[in-house]
Length: 307
Image (cartoon, one colour):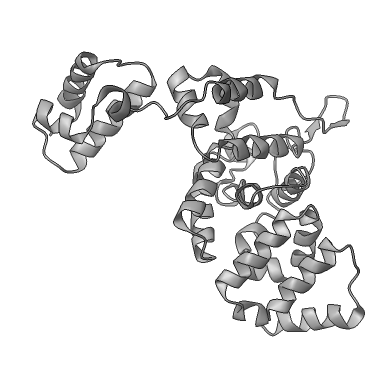
């Protein structure tokens, strides 16, 4: 059964055409459900090889035509027919946009970038709200968050490591948020750029923008993506500075759970975790910058949240 996937991959990577008997054999094998006989780790390997090659768009189209995509990645098939606002996405539905984004990727990509681009908009199917309900246009509120959770589930189903699934899910979550990088407070921006997948996130962001065709007022289509000089300049500056660690309470101020329990008397449990997360967020937003301001912040936070 693995030859079903290998046939599709090799046909596209080598620029061949399907011999008629081969095409019929693939169709029959898929019809008989043989595709589900392939072990998840072998499926993972073949799909990853297909996605990493610059023929990835055509490979995905073949998977779809043969009915393989529906069997292995039904969440991607579900994007067909999911309409988008025409002014922002004149290229078509979410499935069309996803294939275009894959096509706009560089020739050489990492497995992480390939999978994140494929999965970046899967959250749009379950979060779509019609224009009649929003009052202006079709919207996909929270699709980045929903898609992140879905991506992690899909990749774990295919037996990817927890780390790989987590990094791809992170990219899906921030594929829109990276736009705000020039306006973020320094510590929060540094925290984002310190993530090991940030360089891939930037490439995903570019491909996503290129694949979003706008409809202009005169009815013409603009598929020229905006330049990314500001984000790229910030990224280059960050790399040149050779930061060794992201901003963190523990590393920079020595504040951790032990400190919090000692200073406030909070016991281990959910409240301690919430308090520490609030402190970390406040530090990233420059609301605190030393132990004294941290103590003042947490005292006020506890007054509001301790029961």
